[in-house]
Amino acid sequence: TLGWDKFQTPRIYFDDGSNIFNIDDSKLWALIFYSHLAVRPSCHTCRFANLNREGDLTIGDFWGVEKQHPEYLVPNGASLVLINSDKGKEAFKEISDNLVCSLSDAVQALPDTLLYVTKPHSKRSEFWNDYEKMSFKSVTNRYLDLGKKNEYKRKLKRVLRLPFRLIKNIMK
Image (cartoon, rainbow, N blue to C red; front, side, top):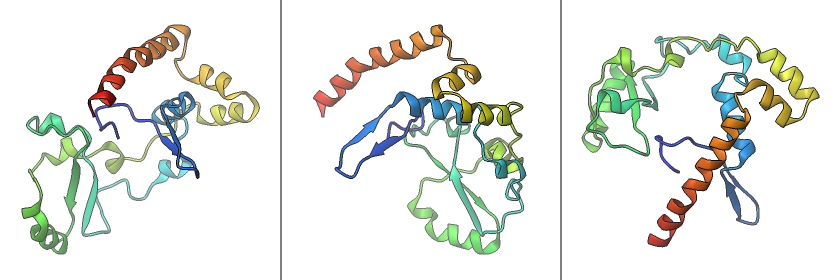
């Protein structure tokens, strides 16, 4: 993994043990997902998008940990733990000596998706209708800001990253 401070794309593993990473189409799917065009309809009515938690603990990614805790240099991410019950409090107390823990401002720490359902993208239906009829490239060009200027920027970034990756691999 490149860590949470880098834009992630999937790594695809094949039966023969080989794998590929940083595939252009997977980057595009990530952009589509983060634009909310491909969010599942169930996310728009999620019954868990509130603070009435059913479990004793809720554990998730702590996006933006560096804003509340700049002392944490955590390129691989940090976890946010919500204690929802007395039983959860006791369980967390038992393991907390083995963890690096800090109290956080709940309002700032909680992701919006835990508080509110994701609103549907205004063009979600249109996107999926076009996806059924058009090529992937045509759909992404229509719905994402992928003009020539941005395409050149993406290619330039990829080319500029190459020497750093080579040096990193040599130094391993």
